[in-house]
Image (cartoon, rainbow, N blue to C red; front, top):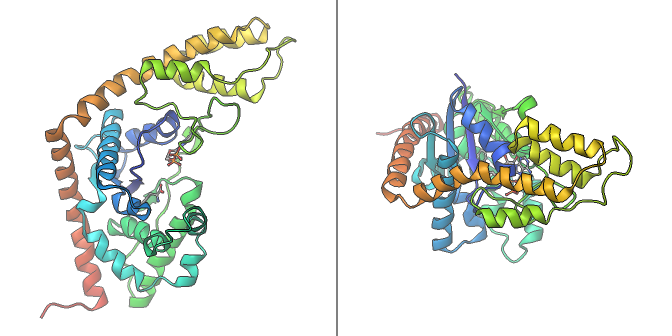
Length: 329
Ligand code: ADP
Ligand code: TRP
């Protein structure tokens, strides 16, 4: 069985894009692989969050992943800072990471531009910490989006460099986990582009019904088709894409037919979409509320995850220390 590892930045609530584009696949994947899911709270320190915000975000993200179906009995779900072994591997890998290559990292250059008043060393070595997360469990596969591919490439480079330096074949070179056909992109409802936190067009799993209704009723449309089987403009396609993931096939074909016959009323379409999103998110939202207020359960999940993760991590650290030449007297 392959080891798959996924890191999640604790940046607040999850939207439908995160759910259908990632989380839903993770829920399935956990039964087919040896999965590690962790919340990257060390990574989030590069932006200097307030302690209460950091804590709140970790609680929220953990609760949302559990509510959506990640199972702590099946996968190893942990919080990065509960496994301090990663900090040691990070220190060791930093000795073989060169300033030039770190400065050339696309995400570093981007962040340095965005937060020019806070270009800290953690930001520069972000990829080294990410490589440490992955190599700590010698993961074979890592599900990553396009923006993280370069970090995975650097992880392979660090693994190779370590192996060559010490003449061992210790670290795997991890590759991207490919969801293949199943990968879908969820659009926003503001006309163009994908649903994204930074675009401000997210419909969140945690949104209440009123909020969802408001967001969907505001969706961009056009003046309607004027000839039969008219090609849909992008905003309309986007509404149908969302309908396809949350509604019954009958509902989708009903509205498609209406569109093709120029009989569509966008108000009805939006009302149906809002209703079906609410129907889908309500049970998840209820579980999020229940889980996030259950400290005892969250503590138990975090403890279980940390135990499993540390068992795997401490073995790696012990091996790496020996390879490097730290020998106990
Ligand atoms: P955001 O920028 O909106 O917070 P991230 O870029 O952090 O989202 O993405 C987290 C995960 O969710 C990634 O695996 C990404 O591929 C997935 N994801 C985010 N938005 C979408 C979307 N609109 N459609 C499909 N998948 C998405
Ligand atoms: N860098 C990832 C992101 O921004 C989060 C992350 C940290 C990660 N460590 C990881 C992802 C290890 C995969 C594997 O989304």
